[in-house]
Amino acid sequence: MSSTPVLPPAPKVYIRTFGCQMNDYDSGKMRAQLARDGWQSTDDPDEADLVLLNTCSIREKAVEKMHSALGEFRRQKREGRPLTLGVTGCVAQLEGDALLERYHNVDLVLGPDGVPHVRRLVAEARSGQRVLDTDFLDLETYPFVTDLDPDAAKKVGAFVTIQKGCDNRCTYCIVPTTRGDEASRPSAEILDEVRRLVETAGVQEITLIGQNVNSYGLKVPHEKNFAELLYAVAEVPGVRRIRYTTSHPRDMGDDVVQAYQDLPQLTSHLHLPVQSGNNKVLRRMKRFYTRERFLDIVERLRQARPDLVLTTDFIVGFPGETEAQFLDTMSLLDEVGFVSSFSFKYSPRPGTPALRLKEGHDDAVSGERLTRLQKRQRELSLAWTRSHEGQVVEVLIEGLSRHDEGVICGRTSANLMVNFPGSASEVGSWAKVRVTRGFTHTARGERVAAPVEIRARRA
Ligand code: 5AD
Ligand code: SF4
Image (cartoon, rainbow, N blue to C red; front, side, top):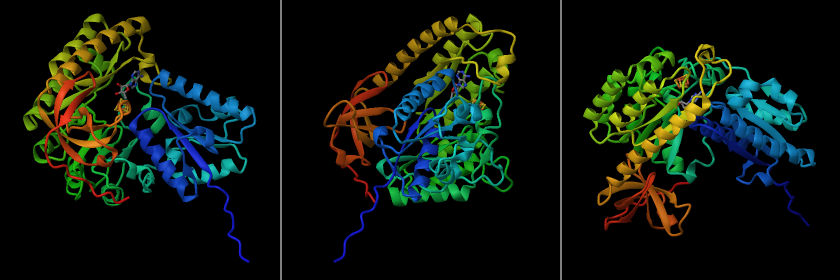
């Protein structure tokens, strides 16, 4: 008689991601590498054997969020739950040792450059060691992880990292401290990942990500620059849309502007963080462009692509910012007509040059300015979505509406999300939709009679 051996259940990992798209991507790469050792990824923290909090330190609030999430898992461990608990990402880099000292039931602390070694580090933590890895890796041989996120096939779009770190030193920003200097990933590797995402996971929209994508390749002899990379990605068969984030206005060259004329795959939406509309504040932030130069870039981009829409990031209440300087930011918002923005109160970050500015900042004043800015932004956003009413737009269907049954959502090239009746089987297809109503962030529509192209799902 033979009996089938009973295999132990696969161990499960739950990764909670805070912060930006770089962290999202790193979480995917950690999942991919752990899968090689048999780890199954789960969305349910209660069934996990390993919990990783992939953290963000860009503003104080983000750090607070991670501490409260950590507190919950620490409590469960104290009550006897067998769990390996790790902190990864930017807070891990910043606090390092201190996290292990302060929290006795944290097993693993690894910074962003620890991602390529996650399998070994997790294995060490599971064998009972307390593990710390916050070393920066060599920039010239930086080992970008090539395994695909096992969840990639669930989505119509995917991120592809093209660089790590940042060589800029914006005076408010902690990123250079937590992610180190910039390294560009070899273009052959990027193009290979794009091809694999299209061919094996059926992905149609690629978002190239990095802290400052416009400076891609500049430090590496014989490497493509960012514009050349865009043209090469556009040549990969099956890539229907290309987005990228984040770009720095200083490095927005004429060749990238030209790409908006030449490459239909490049979407009609660009996120271009301006931070402030006042030249003195921009100088003190060390952004290396002026309001006039920013407006000039916008004008040239719109000549190249008349329907281009722009979104941005703003910081209000930077140390010493006067009311008049803030009003320059308000007027820039209108002058460019940003259709949406992320806006933040200045948050002092440890070790950043802005801490040494002699002028202070007043949180209450920043809060009041933020309210005014966001109110005006909502008006502009609504005006933009409403300007689509009655128009027929083409959308790539991304998924089901989270709120209404029988409703799906699709995104236009310009990044407008439109909800309309449909079913799950249509995810990954393209549709022509008439916009019937615009809201602040999304729109509602109805399909117009037109053939729907169904994507062949290969995964
Ligand atoms: N305070 C407030 N906002 C910040 N950002 C970066 N650092 C800070 C800070 N110290 C914002 C910028 C950046 C976005 C990712 O976060 O607007 O573009
Ligand atoms: Fe921070 Fe400036 Fe680098 Fe962006 S470009 S990550 S804001 S230092």
